Structures are given as C-alpha cells and as structure tokens.
Amino acid sequence: MASPQSGPEADDASRVLRRIFGYDTFREGQREIIDHVVAGGDALVLMPTGGGKSLCYQIPALVREGTGVVVSPLIALMQDQVDALRALGVRAGFLNSTQEPDERREVESAFLAGELDLLYLAPERLRAPATLSLLDRGAIALFAIDEAHCVAQWGHDFRPDYLALSALHERWPAVPRIALTATATEATHAEIASRLNLREARHFVASFDRPNIRYRIAPKKEPKRQLLKLLRTEHPGDAGIVYCLSRASVEKIAAFLTENGIEALPYHAGLDARTRAAHQARFLREDGLVMVATIAFGMGIDKPDVRFVAHLDLPKSVEGYYQETGRAGRDGLPSTAWLVYGLQDVVQQRRMIETSEGDDTHRRRLGTHLDAMLALCETVECRRARLLAYFGQQGAASCGNCDTCLSPPETWDGTVAAQKILSTVLRLRRERRQSFGAGQIIDILLGRKTEKVVQHDHAALTVFGIGTELNESEWRGVVRQMLAQGLLAVEGDYGTLSLTDASAEVLARRRQVTLRREPERTARSEPADRTAGPRRTAPADLPEEALPVFERLRAWRAATAREQGLPAYMIFHDATLRQIAAEHPSTLAELGEVSGVGENKLAKYGEQILRELVS
Image 1 (tube, helix red, strand yellow):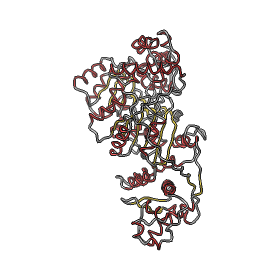
Image 2 (cartoon, helix red, strand yellow; image 1 turned 60 degrees about the vertical axis):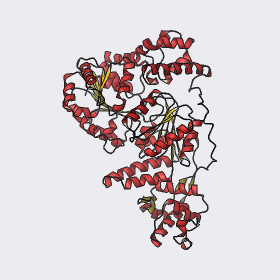
Image 3 (cartoon, helix red, strand yellow; image 1 turned 60 degrees about the horizontal axis):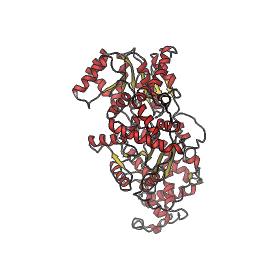
C-alpha cells in the first residue's frame, strides 16, 4: 500500500482547494485522506453528513492523472451533482438510464478523450459489459464508492447492486478505491470492508458528532399542531424536511401545512416519477420550502441550508435516524432535529417486526435496531452522548445542545405502576383468557366502565380502578416505556399486550423500574394568523446592520439561480453570503479571499456582487 506523500502533489491539493472550491484550509481529517488517495492508497472513510466527504475524492480526482469514477446510487441527483461541479469549473459528467443515446455517446467520448475530471455512474451500470469496456479504454484516476453503507445487507439502505463492486479491484488493481459513508456502526463498518474487499485499505473514522444540530425528542400528543408550532415559532420561512412513516400521512401533513400558510410538498414512492422529480427539484432550487416525505427521500440531498428535520413517526433504527437528521445544517449553522413519538409508534413498530418477511435472525436484528432507537428516545442522559456511543464513539457526558442537557428530565420509581400494568395483563390472560390493547388496560386501571370493559365482567377484576393515581397520559407513558425496556411485548394484528421473560422479575419485586416523568400537558395554543408572513432573524454571527445586505445578496442569488436553472446554493452557500455581508469587500481581490469564492465563481459573479454591495 502506498504511503501518503507530502511533495508537490500535496501542494496541488491545497491549490485545488483554494482555486476551485474557494477554501483556505481543509476540515479536520480531510487532508490526511486526500494525501493518502492521491498517493494511490485505498481508503474507507466514515465521516458525518456535512463533514466534507465529497472533497475527499473530488480533489484527488483533480490532482491525479485520469478521470475519477464515482459510483453512486443517486440517479435522480446526478444531474445536480454534476451541475454543482460544473459551476465550480470542474469538468464533470454522468452516465445513467435517464439519458438519451446521443447524450450518453457525448459523455463517453469526453471520457475517452480525457476531457472529464469526474464521471458519475450508477452501480448497476458496472454490470454492463459495455460500461466495463468503456472504462478499460479510458484513464481512471480513482474509484469512489459513495453511500458505501448500501452494501450492508442488514443495514437500513441496502442496494443489491453494491455487492458486485468488490470486483473493481480485481479488474483495475492499480486504481485506488475510496469508499465513503456517513452512517455505519462498527458491525456495518466491518461489513463494508469485507464486501468491498477493502480489508487492506486504510480506515479513516471521523467524529460522528454534528455539534450544530440540536436533538429534541418529545411525547406525541397532537403531532400536526406540535409540528406547526415548531415551524411557526422556531423556523419561520426555513427550508426543512418532515418525515412520516406512511404515504397517507405524508399527503395529510403536506396539505395541513399548506392550509396553514406553510408551503409544503409531498414526496413518496406512490407518486409518479415526474411528480417526485418536480418536487425534489423545487425543494433544491427554492428557498424556504418544506418537504414532507417518507424515507424514500433524502439520501444524497446536498442542500446546505436545511434548517430542520422533523420526524412525526418513530424511525426504525438509530442509523436511519442519524442519516435522516444529518440532512439538517450541512452548512454548519444551527439546526434542529426534532422527533415526536408515542405509545402507538412502539406498538406499530413491534407489530411490523413480528409480521416482517425473513427468518428469526432477521427479526431479531430488526428488534435490536428498534431497541436502540427506543433507548435513545427514553434516555435521561445526554442524547448526543448516547448517539455517539451507538457508533462506538465516546463524547462528553453533557453536550449542552440537546433537550436532556438543556432541560434535564425527572425520573421516578415506576415499579409499582409497572406491577399494576403487568398484573392486569396477567389476570386477563390467566383468569379470563382475554388479551387487551393498551387503551383497554388503562381504562381498567382508571376504573372506566367503557363498553369493552363492562362486557368482560369488570366488577370481578381485582385490578379494576387501582390506578387512579395517574392520568391517562401518564399511564400511556408508563406502557410506552415498559415496551421500550422489554417489560411488555406486543402480539397479534390488534396490538394486544403480553408479558415477557423480564416481566416476572418486576412482578416478583426483583427488578426496579425507573421511568422518565411525562411532561405536563399544556393547553393547546390557538394557531397563529395563517396570513402572516415568515419572520426573518439575523443569521448566527451576523451583525444586525449586515442583515439587509445579506437579504439583498440572497435575493440576487435567487434571481441568478432562476435564470440559470440551478439551485440557489450552487451559486453560493448562505455561509459565504453571510461573510460577504459582514466583511463588505470592495474589490475583486478582497472578494476572492472570502471562504467559498473560488476562481470560477469570482470570475463569473464577482462584479455582480460588488454592484449589489454598493446599491
């Protein structure tokens, strides 16, 4: 394996960073990876979303002889990825099934003529003999395997075509390979290395921490109203993503937000391809849109100014949750990861696992993923610390930027309450041979004579009415947390409750049950005036007097992006406009010193920006 070099080529990497991308310094970890790949070494890179993974293969492709071949599953986003590079002056192209024959031939000719710096391919194209023959006839600088977690069969985003990518080294043994992902536990990390034949590669593992993201998880009460309050009070006019479990929920939430004055678009697999593409393009190109989506949306979304990611349903795994929340705040500015979940989420997820296809091993794996997600939701410790620990990284005991750090939750001894729940379930099953769901169990404990309770001879139940010390919301919290701790199980199509092996320890008083105290329900606030426009506040670290300049630059950027048919962030990121507004450069030379202003963009937009600054 080649060792990293530090001669002229290393200097070339710094010059490319400044000249093309407009940055003076590498982010933590980038330089070592780039030097290693430039020198011809294989690499497996684990780096968080927004950590600058793409530069780790783009710069080596620009420094080394030949074309960097990027394998990516994101066909719908390849055009945007290529457009973003071309806006920087990089010669980029792609080959996928969306192209007309003439367009494909043009890209192939450019590759063979050595006129491409980067070529993007979908993994399935590498199964085609014609593609392999094409690559054989060209000069390849490196292979970059993006979204490498897609090779993990038990991961959250498996793509079968990725399994064939281990053959790259066999066919082109002298070409360095770099596999990159933002989401990998230690087990997934090992699986990537094994399946891609990267055991001898150098592994680079950056911190998974995204300190600019504030993690918040709250009990689900009225999720639509909770979401609306979040968007109106904390993120007015901001771009964001709202994740829902079902297509029907996506449609309902998108309609609800639109009715309440927030421009929102739905995205799910049930929409036709044209509609999905149109909605994705609008989200990328316009400011302030909210995308309401299933998890079919998001991988590879490079929009840097997504200010919030909200989950209205419980994610199936911590990996999925981390990947999805990581789409917020890619520009490093403060952003929110917000989740509401409740008892029904746990019941539904448990039932989905029990009825899922696959063998017992598969179901156990799904159950393990869900248990870890529930532990994150119910923790009384720092959420960030638990999240990092899941990925094998130890952080500070308190991050100071999650809900449990900012408002530490109270705990209480819920052993007696848990015993009452378990006793009710046990007696109904043993004495009546009946199974109830959570709602009816709680009705029995509260002494409610509902139709379903009465018809089962409630008066003879010794547990009837023994739980009036808690209200319904508190009891639902107890059941939810018992399910999360494995003290109760869900079975059958109707989500009835049953005991587990751990239940006996609680009933026998051999195990104490510590629970989070449920926050008190606050009165529902009336919705704000739906005709009110978005409130704009000064971006972080921007002086108040610079805000009008920043907004003027944003308006110029939006108009320029529309004219060119590009997403606004491909012109300049908010962070770059913020620095311009704050520093107010008066010459092209001064403007060229701003982070994010490379040579191509300076030549293309420099005079326009200077005119905006003096207008």
